[in-house]
Image 1: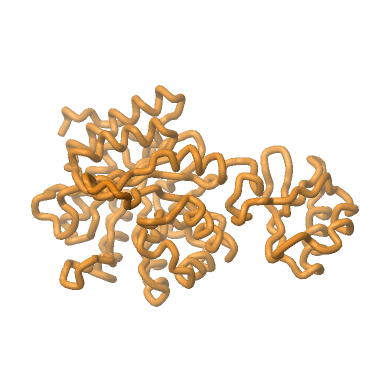
Image 2 (image 1 turned 180 degrees about the horizontal axis):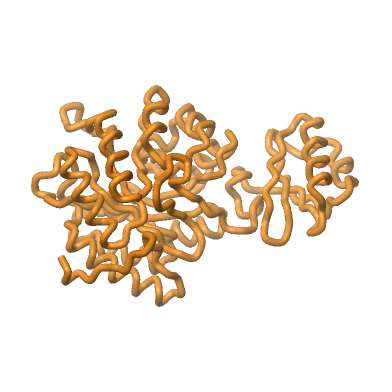
Length: 359
């Protein structure tokens, strides 16, 4: 259920409603909006008992039943789009915002391999206009013999790259045991497709309060993705960004089928930002740029793209990584597409996009 307060409701009236909800045995979530404050109620498995008592409280305008199984995530619960700021907790020089009008680009290597590699790529993607750096320190791999990442050393190198460039860092968290180490170095926690329904991990990152990038599972429906986000938000963490990265279908001509229909659908169903990963969807560098263009045209709030300075020698997924020149060319193209739908491309502070010919 959603409690809609009057536009002139005072802070004392809002607190009184929250206390009344708690006295009934439920949890209240106050969510200020541009024209009103709404208070969501969770913890109920059916109609709210004694709802009339709440409706009679000063400052309450109306009670609205939220029909979606995901309450906190739903557009019914929050009218305005959520803006998620990344980078303020660990002091990134240039905090990034996901959501809102600007389209934000996240880029970096699939896996941190060395200091030289991650610093070279970090500077390259920043110079091309990326506002966040991605990179894996812990890598879930299908084969137990494949490169699993550098672990804590990889986290340390990502932190060094943040210090050198000012870009906030997003990296994957695989289990609750390594969460304290990842929190010491990462500005944003990525939940990979394989862990989208790892509910203990979702709860743990929810309690951490750190912004979370939640990727859609290989066989997950949009409803499954939104309910996974609900696990995070129900633990008190509102800073969730969703990511469409392709799903498995009957078609085996591509690594995954990129479901771009999910972008406008999620925007109708939820207030959370939604970005797209064209690298994992395609599995091939020559298809990444067309998919990136299509994602921006479909209304995605951002992209997360793999970039490597020497893809032929990459330890992981080199075949889908863009080189710095091709990434710069992609940035110029998606900037024009974003402008065509009246959206700017987010940029690091004091940066003009480099021309692809400058590489």
